[in-house]
Image 1 (cartoon, rainbow over the protein chains, first blue to last red):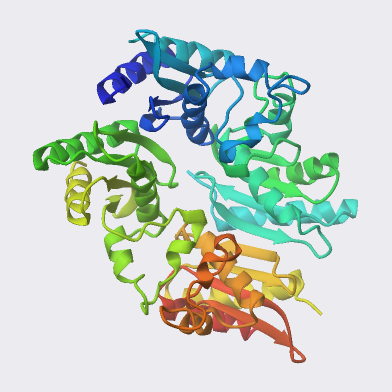
Image 2 (image 1 turned 135 degrees about the vertical axis):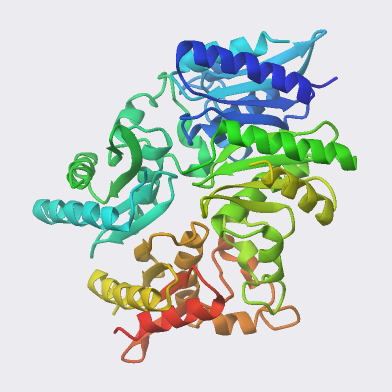
Length: 132
Length: 132
Length: 132
Length: 132
């Protein structure tokens, strides 16, 4: 009950196609049910600072079974999870681009995208998640 | 397509001159296209806490091809990149003083300055960036 | 003068084929000239502890322009680089499986492989490096 | 009673000249009496993995007021300081290339060099230290 490398590649291919379509090179990462990286690609020209972010958006989405965008809403100052970004040795990303992936009602992994605006990252991550 | 040591020294010399002009000793760092440090100087009397900050402002400016001041605007609470400062193992600086440096339309490195107010850091970094 | 994503995928495909041939699932990572990750894959069944190791073997091979196997020979107790594994925030790997990749006499990136014995990792990394 | 930026530049210039003479590009770093970085340069073509090492060889030499080469002799397995490289958050380097610098019998800073063999690093560091 976890994503495998074939799944990860399908997710990445779909995300990459969407990134190409919107003209924004991206880092795309997929983790398994254990939160561990299965695959990562940095498209030519994508930011090097987004390598870590894409991997950790995927980790975060699986770590809490929630989209990082939604976690972010709850992690602003004065919200219930404010400060959560300091946990897990800097691996918790609280902005758009990480999405958990489910199969038969169970979260089996996640995709993380970083390289553009929050909206662009989210769009590309959604395209990736829709591949399965 | 990257800054070299000669470039870095020219950038540092220009930044140092500006820091002298405004009477505020600074840490000044230059990274290459890969985000890796080429050179750093701490002017006499500059803060020791700013060694790390200057190096990481330069890293950040290259990591996302953006001035740290502008990244900061997007990284405040409720903005699209809020929480980005937790990524990349503490290397992301989201306040003024880091500027990417381009040649023929491509980012080839960056300068980072720390040691004064945000405005002073920015002024000195701009003087450095203008040297090329 | 750096590897790009197309190169990285060719390297990974060749390494993956060799790993399949010897029947040992592997983590395979490729970094660019700046030491920054371009792509990573974990084959189904490969160790999760090897994710970090494969990425950092690739980093190490580029960081010192040397195969990690050879660096390892010089980093044993009483050898000239003993203790180097404590540097670079735990990113230096001193056992077989990381190989720098050159083009026109310049190192343009590196491949890192982890998931089997040192000999297996080395064999798979060599197959990857030979793809270019 | 500490090295200043003028001193650091004199040390770096001498080290750089020696590195040029032996034909091995180096990373050269100088720290003050507090162990804090004053200046660093990476000569064109020098290893990126040696940025951290040069800075931390200088730190180590001042941290214990001893050449890293000599500390290394005492830090091999079964010697009195074996394991010291695990301390100070990975900043302790126990191989040749870091030398404390004294004035009037007091250690006022240190130089750290990394980029070649242990012998080359030591030679270049000695040339740097001799500049004062």
